[in-house]
Image 1 (cartoon, rainbow, N blue to C red):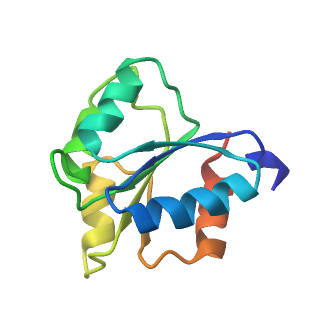
Image 2 (cartoon, rainbow, N blue to C red):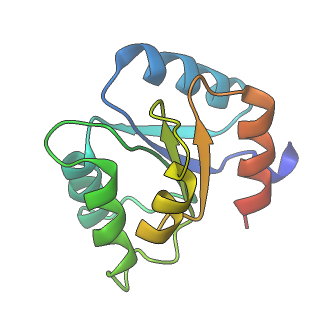
Length: 126
């Protein structure tokens, strides 16, 4: 867990309950959490200089969904080295592959298993 202490996590999700649950969990483990409500908000924060250690990116969101956001991140030299974990409730066969192909580094289904989330964060934290 020390590896994650003080890491900046950009949590991109449009649902308040997910933001509260995941944000509280991460903050309780001494990570800093910045929230964006959709991909457009995420890009605004990144372009303003926010540099997260990891992005937790919901796929199904209004304005700019996770797939569009992944495409932009993957093709932007300033942001394509930031590990992105796709988080989606639409956990259907092939979704993991679709997310990875779109540019995610990893994938987790909702409801989020917090132990799995912590393992994935540890895996991608530098």
